[in-house]
Length: 148
Image 1 (cartoon, one colour):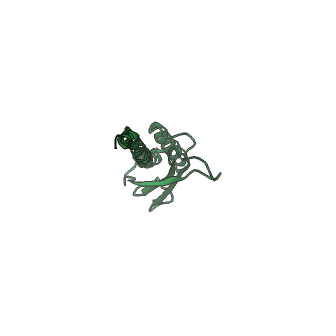
Image 2 (tube, rainbow, N blue to C red; image 1 turned 60 degrees about the vertical axis):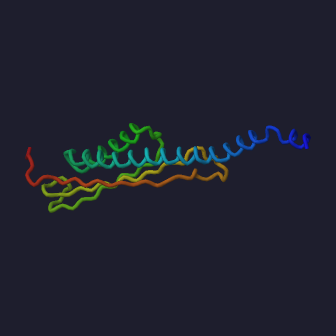
Image 3 (cartoon, rainbow, N blue to C red; image 1 turned 135 degrees about the horizontal axis):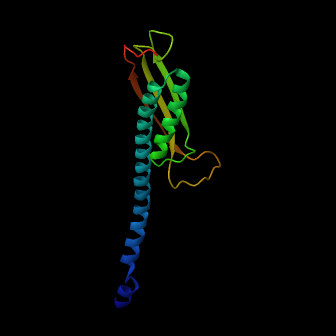
């Protein structure tokens, strides 16, 4: 009976370590993924707001498009997302005039992006798995405007 007790001595620690690793690694990956997606969602939301404001403050529609894209990209960079993250900025407006910058117009900017999942190896050779993110922001243009 003594030899049997000696054979199993110390196995509880080994089992505890293996069980801890088997549970801790997936839990750590889930937490990192949630943080990465939250960072991306916060960045896309801020990018939509900044892009809409930049478009509304531009003197015309052409410069508004350029400023909206630059503002959205800068906000994503400020949130720590990589420079090569996909970004699509779409502007739509309801306007009583011919321009989105005419009085009474309502500008809506939608920003689409994507966040790759962390610590996922590139096994199949395609794009890494990720989460698609989008946000929109609406800005009204005032009825009365300064004429230059």
